[in-house]
Each structure stands twice: as C-alpha cells, then as structure tokens.
Image (cartoon, rainbow, N blue to C red; front, side):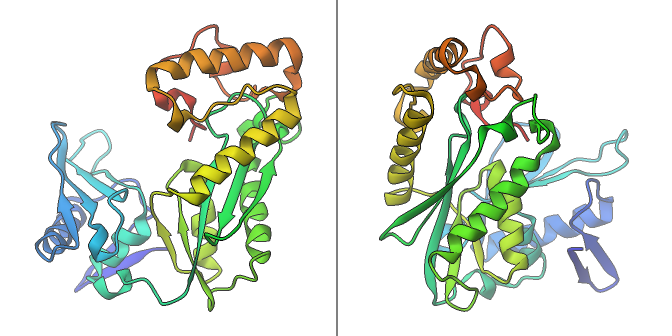
Length: 284
C-alpha cells in the first residue's frame, strides 16, 4: 500500500476518493514542488478541475507524467486524483526530489506495438540502443472466443511475463540496468512489476531506434501472420487517415483471416469506427 505520512495525516494513493484534508495536502505538496521547479502547472478549462501539473524533463520527470486533482464531488463523497504514475506522486508528497535523479546504470527501453491494430497480437520490444529484442502476445488473448478471452485481461499477465523473459536476454538486473518505459495502458502493470523486482523504472516518451525498429518488426510479424502488407504505423499517418486504414485492414481480416481479428474489442464488431485516435487503442 502506498501511504505517505505528514504529521498525523496518512494518504493512501491506492484509493479512488480522497477527503478534503487529503486533497489539500496533495495540492500543497504539488504547489511546493512547482515552486521548486520539479513540476509545472498546466492551465485547463475543465470547471471541476482544481489543479493540473506535469513533469519537468530537466528535473528527472518526463512531461508525459501528469496529475489532476478535482473538486469535491458530493456523489462520490470526496475528491478524485487522476495520475499517470502514482509512484512519482508519492515521491513528490515526500518531497523526495533526489530520487528523480536517474541512477548511473545502463538503460533499457521498453515499448509496445500493435495495440491499435485490429489484426494479430501485440508485440513488446526492449532495446539497449544497440539491438532490439521482441516477443508477441498472441491474438487469442485479444479475442472473445478463447479460454483466455480479452475480457479476462490475461493479455496483461502474458505481456509482463514475456517482457521479463526478454529482459533476461540482456542479462539485466536491478543492479546493472534501469528501465525507461512507454506510458501506454498495457505497460502500466509491467512498470509496477519491474519496480517490485527492484528496478528503477521511469515512464517516458519512447522515440528513436526502438520505436522505429519495433514498428518495422511488427510489420514483418503481421505480414507473416496474414500474408499481406496491411499494417500501418498510426504515428506515421495523418489522424484523419487512420479510420480508412483501420477499416481496410479489418476488411482484409474478415475476408482472408478472420481468426486473426481482435474480436474482443468493441470496434471490430461495429460497422463504423470513429476518427478519434483513441478509438484505436487497447481499452483500459
């Protein structure tokens, strides 16, 4: 349980709802961190939002990290705190700013591919910036007609297990390597597991070699699975083009390889798909 104590106040960051006193404490600590330059305030127009902050790269917290504190909700009986990584928030509540300085260890980066594609499984990739090693969660974990159907969320366990095995190919250990990992939904349980194993794990934006190579390796994997170059990199096409590319891939799957469709999702089971990029991500 992630609990952080200030005098007689104990804040449990695993909760969904916080008392006004707890929310006030969190806001005070975030404001202090902002004054110290560790985080920066974000201006948003949401009426119910009290405060929003994001990380400062130069201080060791990626700008991809953010936290939002909402006003008191009578129905919920408290305040909501939404955060991309509660571990970082915990360090801020303790004013443990030194922990944001990365340890002097080798870096391994982790990213995923295929989470927004309607066919085939999802790939995890790990790189030391010299090589990229991968593994694939089979499509059966993203379908609705298997023992390990998508709704069981077994894909999260398999993804974690495969990632840990891939790490072993680099002879990685908490004493030799630290981890930088993408912020995506499928990576969140893996992030927490690696921390339990003792690794220093930082959520960040993955670019460069790993991202580019992983997309190509995933394309090759899809080619081999379905026999056609129907894959597209969602980061490499315009947002407005994604629905058309998505539907084309899905239609190919329906005609030629229906067993490769991620039928556990809602979108492949509907006639149309929204143009919003978020419609093409693994649901939480």
